[in-house]
Length: 85
Image 1 (spheres, helix red, strand yellow):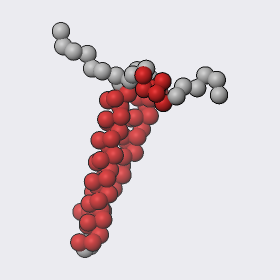
Image 2 (cartoon, one colour):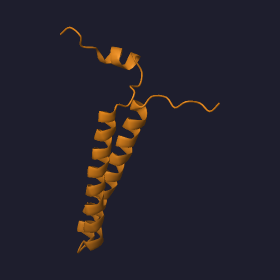
Image 3 (spheres, helix red, strand yellow):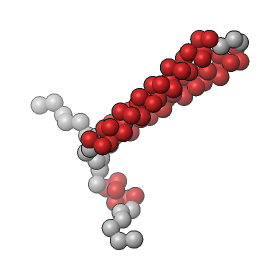
Image 4 (spheres, helix red, strand yellow):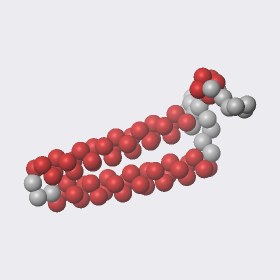
């Protein structure tokens, strides 16, 4: 298909500048993950037994990991940070 770039070509271009649309998507994703995290923490706190608490704790850990992954993707998509003068 003409006009399509390969993965290698995209990577060679380097990090992309973050568009307003991309910022909005990251914001929405972070809000959604924050909601999941809050519900998982509530489930963990109110769990009736150790098995349920452990399951909720796993969801908490996964939500935190997903938030970290989204932050890292955003950092890498924003391009290199300018060096202090």
